[in-house]
Amino acid sequence: MYTSLIKQLLPVLLCLYVSINTLQALDYKKLTAKDFTGTTLPLAPVTDIFLDLCYGPHTPENIKAKLQVFKDIGFQRVYFVIANPGYPTYGMDMLDFAPTPKTFGNYAKASVDAVGDINKVMIETAHELGMEAWPVFKPYEGGDGRSLPHGKKHPVRERGLSCIGGTAYGFDTFILDNPEMRIQRRPEPHYEADCAQNVTRIELAFCTNPQSYKKHLGTLPPSAGHALTDIQLWTSNDNGTYTAYTGPVSIKQSSDTRIITDANGFPSLKGVAQPCHILTLDGFESPAPYFAVTFTNPQKRHVTVPWSMITAYGKGGLIPTTIGTRVRKDLVPLGTEWNDRKKHRFDTDGFEFEDHGWGVGYPGWHNLSSYGIAKGKNSHVKGTLCEAYPEVRAYWLATVQQLIAYGADGIDFRLVSHSCSVTDWANYGFNKPVMHIYKQKHGDELVESEEDYHDIMHIRGDFYSLFLRDAQQALHAANRKMQIHMSEIYTDHTHDGFIRGLVQWGNPKIFLNWKEMVDLADEITIKDKQRGRYKKKNCALIKQRAAAAGKPIWVHCYLTQGPGLQQAYFDSIATDPRISGVLIYETVKRHNPNSGMNRPGIVGIAPDGSLMRDDRVIDILQALKQKE
Image 1: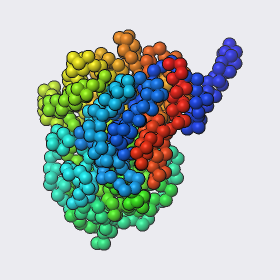
Image 2: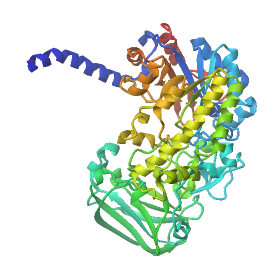
Image 3: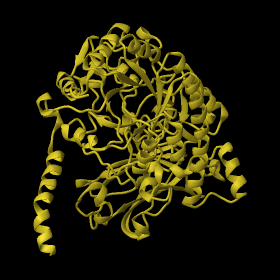
């Protein structure tokens, strides 16, 4: 019986296999309008205002011309990720507020000088063209705080904040005025005394079991039996210039077994001890605040979790340190100067500490040949405000009220940002208002277990909910709508995979009551990446609750993180009656002749201020909208 059933199902399974693999193999960059037959779902573009401003010089005239392209495609609603006061930077070296370059570079300052209040201009221009205007507000987008070495000034920004590695720039103005209201690090006893020690020993441990990190780094040659070579210790006083340490240093290499942990000290690999190669540098003493260790790492075979497997010691014991894995790039890359400096070196540029670009996967495996070591920890998450302060929630609400005054038809609230990246998330969130609630529940009990940290995340989530309730009241009082970004990770606070998602680089590390969020919202956005294949089961509980209340649900189609822009993707979405529309994300056409960047989009502004249309994508979108 089973054999007969398998024979009957075999053609179906084969077709399914072929369909899935065909979908995965599709290169949407080669697709044209002929490959699309349309969709009945409404489409709406999403544009990141500040990114747009950086890539080309904007004026009121070319903004209107750019939005006219959206209108001509047939979009009835357009979303703008707003530019917060102070134009906070994103996690990319180019996306800073920079002087106007003489050659291709960054045009943010020129755009703002020419346009003024860009959020107001975008909303009013969309309305002038007969389209709805929906700002996307990311309260936690406060700036990723890219740094310059100690003593070096930013050419445009007047104010910065001290951080591990130098002075950080590119923050929301409220953060610059109230840095103490950012997410605070756990107070540590004897911290100042521990950091004041001279460094007398540095230890680096490398896992020698390739199966431990295969899932994250793929198959690498085993490092067991291979000693590190060309080992060098470096020191720096400003994290801008590093010099080779010339004093006596004892270098030892040995083997050991250790339990691998993440940056928080939580065991990974099920707590099973792994074989490790240990590199120890001692026999020296240095008061320097910054160090680096370099070595030859052929075939990148020596693998470590830097945040937990690289340590520094003084005569009094362990020294709190921050590990740097990224060499600092030019904070303000301009014209030929940027073009001539594509390769950056830690000894002339320093490290960007606690900067992880678009994030680091858990638990944080690396296989580099140089690591930076800074004494101390950042006292706060660089660019993330704490929602527990009434002043912070009032500031966010003032932004909502301003967007309402500008005429926004609704506001889309997005929790993720580029400002929340820290390696040891469990050591942040210890602001006084949060700990006041925690102590009411637990007394003087220390925050020790992972469940204790989760409780802090719940408390913070409750404070954020207070803001959303106030925002909803303000919107509804003005007859405007609230849209909230949701993700499956909010639906189960006991699922380990979901928790890893909640504490990843882009999230502010809070738990939300997803049912309350759905009930508050007038419309829902599902922020899970579909990767070119719509999955009905994703966010099933959220979709079910929203659909039962008759609330529109939108999903994302990514133009550069896809490949979402393909007919099969829209066909699969159409089989789910709960979905009301699709947001076309990453719409700015980007072309950088210096770096070779040429990414698809809909329309952008060229260096000479002219429109830069992506006619292939535009033709596809027009073909998709034929059925709408």
